[in-house]
Every structure is written in C-alpha cells, then in structure tokens.
Length: 428
Image (cartoon, rainbow, N blue to C red; front, side, top):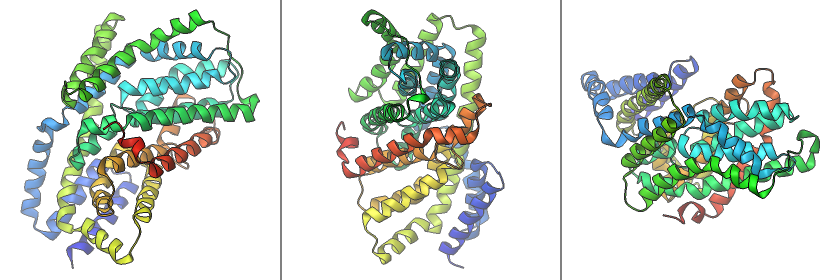
C-alpha cells in the first residue's frame, strides 16, 4: 500500500476519532504516531512522541502564548469589560440600537488584549447582555450581536490564531499582527453597519438609549484608555522594532497586571488568573504537540504533495483552489474550535495555497477570517453556544437568527479582502 493511501486512510480515521469525541489534540497525536509507524517504522515513531513534546514546550517561539492569555485574563479580573461597555454606551447616546453598537464596539476593543474569540464573547456577554435585555432589546439582536462581536477576538491583534499561523508557516508574527489591523477594524465597522441596517429595517428590535452630552461622551472615553494604551504599547513596540512578539507579550501582560492591581485586584484574583492561564495554555500546548506529531506523519505520507498534483491535473484556477479551502474551513468551523482547526489543517492546505501563488500573509488573514465566520455559522457555531451558556432562557434558534446579518457582513469583508489584497498588506 502506498504512503499516500495510508495517509488518507489515517486522516479519515482521525476525523472518525474526533467524531467519537476524542480530544482533537489526542486524535492528531494518535494519527501521527500510527501513520508514521505504518509508513516508516514504529521505533522512530516512538522517538517522535518522546522528543516532540520536549521540542515544542522548550521552543522560545511559543512562549508568547501564555503571556497573551495572561494579559487577557488580567484584564478580565480587573473588570475592565464592564467599564468598557458602560463607556462605549455613552458614546452612542440616544441612538436606536446604541447598546448593540456599544456591545460590538466593546467586543472589538476588548479583543485587542484578549486574543480569543470565546473569551471575548464570554466576558462581554456577562456585562452587556443583562442590560440589553433590561432595556427591551430583542433576544435575537442582543445575543447575535455578542456572538458575532466575540469573533473579533480572533482577528484584531494580538491574536492567538495569527500567532500560531505565523509560527506554523514560518511567517513573521509581527507582520501577521500588523496585517490583521485593517481587516479587524473593517470587521468592526461592517458589524456596526449591520446593526444600523437591521435596526432601521426592524425598529422594534431595539430601543433608543439615554441622550448624553459631549462632556459625558468624553468621560465615557476613559474606559477605552487602558485598552488603547496596552494595544499601542504592543503593536507600536512591534511595528517600531522595539519589541519582539515575545517581549511584547510579556510587556502587555505586565501592563494588564499593573492596571488590575491599581483597580484593586486581590491575591485570590491573582491566583485564579494564574490558574486560568495555566489551564488554557496547557490545552493549547497539548494541541500544538499533537499537531507536531501529526506534521511528521504528513511529511512522510506526502498528502500535501498528492493534493497539489491532483489540483495541477484538474487545472483548477487559483480562485477555485481558494474557494475550496475556504469552504472546508466554514464546514469545520461549525464543529471545531478555531485554534484546533488551524493546527489541524494549515499543514495540509498551506502548500496548496503557495502552489496557487497566494501571498502567505494575505492567505493567513483570509483563512483566519473564514475560521471566524465558522464560529457563528449554524448548525454548530462555537460562539453561539458560549452565548447560550450565559443566556439559558434564549432559544438557540433565536441566537442563530440574530447572527445572520453579521454572517452576511463577514462574507462582504471576505469578498473585499479577496478582491483587494492590499487591505491586508498595506501596513506591512
């Protein structure tokens, strides 16, 4: 049996294990071990298991992951999300749908130091959802806004998804972060447009807020200052060549800690933050180790090379190759976490994208946006279920109904980036 056939059989078996609810990290590791042993030999496969974990965990390149997670957790423990939402709420004053605009704006700003879609959605929904319900917002609009707003955490830098993509494809993490700024802000702007159009077409979904004067609006901006300062410190330091991404992550975590301490973070909060960071980091590193073992198997199975040969034989255009890859991500995004999806698929699809002639950084941005889209796409959008866990009285169908305008806006953003790659590459 050829290595290619063994490779495809093992990949099919891996998806079977995932369907049986085996953790994705373990499924990748098992598949990599069995596949490599089947094609080469099991003694060197055992050596890969022995050395893969050590090489991954001792790599300096992966050290920003726990620091960026710690930064977001410190921000959450400092209750910065509540102040951020209330500050944003004053900016939109008496606008109909102003709280929804404030919620999605808060998600965008909070994601700048969170880096995680699920964490952004969970943190902001606890603050914004009760107030939106109390003020007469339709459940579909309130929950849909927060589910979609949480997805901004995967794009607006610093982003764990962009970090991992850069490390896996050997692209500059700093360039990936800089390239994510315009697409991230474009996503925020399009979400705000989606809310405005939805409320204009169906005014009954939202109520006007309380009018605020200029002084109150300026006072509300104070809630944005800590986020702006940390974001400017990280991105400005990377862009100016002052920090490496690893150093920027450490500086950002220290800045978030200083703000949290200033706002009265207790020793218990600090210990909880460390524990939460360790748990999240362990989960991600476990997946990275699984992906490392899986990567050795992919090399010897020649799956990527075989796919390239198939695409060449079929004479597919670069656009059709891209469309096929993006369709795969939308489908996988319905049932899989974004980080796991990237670790699992990028080693396979990245060579296809390079063979098609795409810019690697642009392809990374488009890929992450498509992964982001999968987080709110029915029937199983991860962010939708995060919001459902916070608002158990709202039917899941109502949340999916509420995310429809945002799905459409993400499709528009994706189309703009495909048509105008300069949107992702202009700042590099």
